[in-house]
Image (cartoon, rainbow, N blue to C red):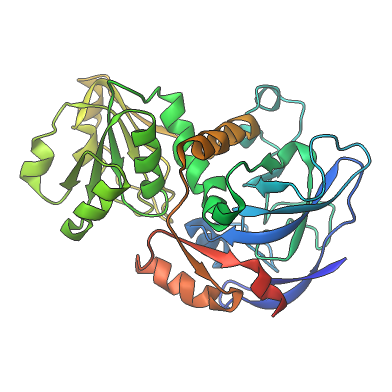
Length: 349
């Protein structure tokens, strides 16, 4: 079936309307009418070939929410009309230890929602900047938020799980002091989630103008990272730091704030590497720098349920599909609070 989408034919061209083909639902497939799709910073890296291996035409989008419109004969967990989501994963090998553990995101043969090889035309996956998508039931998630919040739920499928997973893995909760570096699409979700988990939350920003905004999101304190005195006041005090910044920067400024055995986890993915950290800052306090990416399907469902229970959604700006190129330029300038979401109904306009 042919549907409307918006994507790019090369890394040097703007995104533009196009027609794409989706497969008919198989026995275990769920066909979804996409209502909204979040815009992730990684979409820009991928579309513009800043990360190696972009396949064209490229239709981005892995923060997908909408309604089930059809299911395959063997699907039992979903039915037409259900509110559902699809995140960054649409397939995996289903046979490895990671898949058995519900950590499909670490499967060596994980298939991403766009730009990954697939038997479907045109030979690689096409994402959520489109009217519909067909996904195996294993990778479809149930949305329990009110339908009125559906647009603001979309970014939870990437920004939400990218921050939730490391917070859960490193046991963030009451009695823990947690730093969130960066107050953007990822960082604003990290603040909300860490606060809801009961931690003491300190937000780090380079901009004094973001203090009140960070406190409104749930931060107990806000530190301007360019202020040496403010930084020094927190030396050796953090149990955990979640670093969401997607640009190269000095990691040593934050590792020195960790307690003995503290960990800083990186979830921001810059287009070029960070400078090498100072090893002595790590070995003298047995500190660690770690990495984390999204989460498996069970944990993503857990995150959605947690957010529904605590009334957590992303702060968004809703845009029409034909505003996507302008939105990309604004994202590069940091001109969004805090996530763009496409109203996919405008793809038919």
